[in-house]
Length: 130
Image (cartoon, rainbow, N blue to C red; front, side):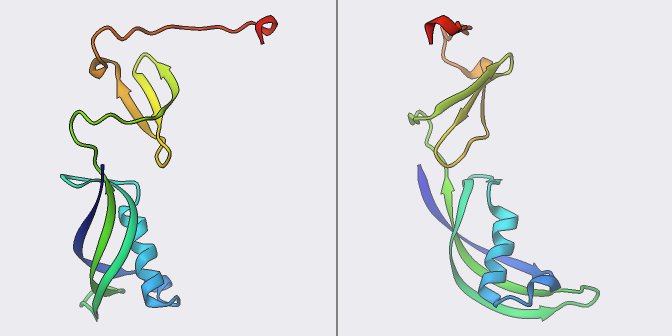
């Protein structure tokens, strides 16, 4: 379900981040770029696990930022096909179910992808039964 993926990326650093220590600034920029995003064939990025190396710091003509070649690992969430996940249903509408896992809450399961025989049941609770 979870895996570490090593990635190398040419990271342009905005000048306003360069007042911070370089590893902190790079981690903040990597989180801005990758956190809570789905990367094709890798899955959903949950966290920047660590930074393995930082090289460069060159400024390219016409750019106002320095670029670093960064090697880092991301903690990815990618359940395998058929894996059973435990979550909490946070809502249901015509589009399908909204589900929350412990670390991620924006999961929507479309109605047409639910198992055969799934039925929508509307419940109402009266004040007397509480």
